[in-house]
Amino acid sequence: MTAYRRVHVPGATWFFTVALAQRRDNRLLVERIDELRAAFRYVMGRHPFQLDAIVILPEHLHCLWTLPPGDSDFSSRWGLVKGHFSRAVPSGESVSASRVKRGERGLWQRRFWEHLIRDDDDYARHVDYIHWNPVKHGHVEHAGDWPHSSLHRFIRDGLLPANWGMAEMPSGDFGEPLG
Image (cartoon, rainbow, N blue to C red):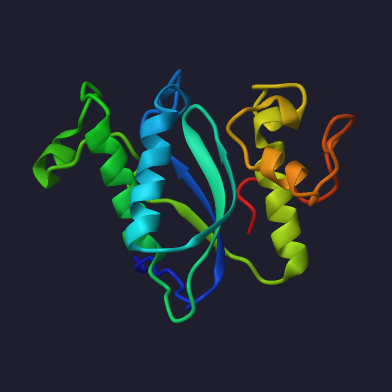
C-alpha cells in the first residue's frame, strides 16, 4: 500500500472539502455557524491565510485559501479549525474505539480533500463550484438564497452579477470532487 502524500506549495491557493464524520441528517455546521466562524477567526489570527471563497453546508464545507508566501502548512490550520470548533460545541456524538484511543472527539472526518489551484480558469471554476453547492445539494433553488456563502461578498464587491446562478447552473465542470 502506498502512503498518501500531500503536495506542499508555499504561497499557493487551495480548494478544500471538509466534512463531518456523521453526515446523514446532520446540521451541526449551520446550527453552530457562530462557533465555526470563531474557529476560523481564531486560526486566521494566529496562522494567517486569505479565505478567498467559502460555503458552509449543514454537514460539510468547501473553500479556497491562499497561503502566505513561503508557507505551505494548510494541514495544521485545518487541525486547529477542527479542534477549536470541536471544543466549542457540546459532546454527544458517537465515537469509535479508535478515536477514543487517540483522544479524538469524532465530529470531523479525519481527512479532507485538497486541490492545488493551477491557474485563473481553475480558480474561477472552483469559486463557481463553491457558490453553486447549496443548489446542487437541494438546500435552495437559487445560490443567492443560501446565507452561509461568500457569494454575497462576491456580488457586493462586483466580482459576480447580482443574478449569478439564478436561472441555470453556471457552465463548468461540477463533478465532485474537482480534480
